[in-house]
Length: 166
Length: 166
Image (cartoon, rainbow over all chains, first blue to last red; front, side, top):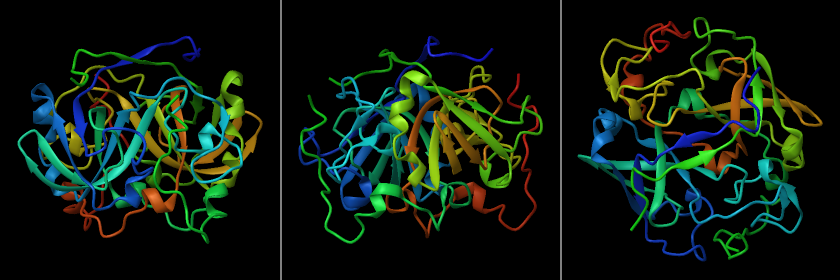
């Protein structure tokens, strides 16, 4: 038998993401909408050797915890529209497992500090993992983007309001 | 103060990924290399409502646990070459937090079952999250892929050997 919903996996941070965003309101909802926003990733010293050669990648994938997010709804209204969608058809922070994913540009590395841009998370966000972004693995064109596509023609809400804060 | 390395985050599976791969050897190292391989995602009934409208997306991001992976090395030789690299410059399963990420094609949904292709994980892999793949957020061209790029010209090892099994 496989693991069921009663299995518990425990993860501890490998570092911290520092950004200009001190609160949810005003935080860009995706790094894509804030390519100029700079931040820093501090990888704790005990994990720093794992960064060897990461500077060869122009983009990295950050996996982190939405640490200010409490609880979740399986169906809710995302930032980008007023129709309800399932949480697994959205990137919202309030999820059964509140793990976030953002692809950022890696500008440079100084020891255990990564200087990044295009970041969209709250200051102090606990980092779980860093993976290199590899076009061959992660790059898909000709994608259909479901409900998000129906909004391609009109201006979108690109910064968070406080609807996921309570 | 932010969370440090002593903080523990607990996650429980939202479902299970079923694939043809019963053991590590022969499992493709990225779904990209096995676009024809089909699998199923079972989302547990208690989370099934969260799938509303996911079928509108041609691709989804699966976050899962490398549940057969034990321990890690911060610096190791990846499948694709014989030079050592840091674990955060690799996609290998043996990581400080053994969370995996694969972008797969979503072929269709039947209730709480998602039929997918391009999957590269072991049968029975515990699923932590599903996120829609959105070109606008996740699609970067003109990327530099570090050590992986130096191999673009020669045939690559595209299936796992057992080096991460022990």
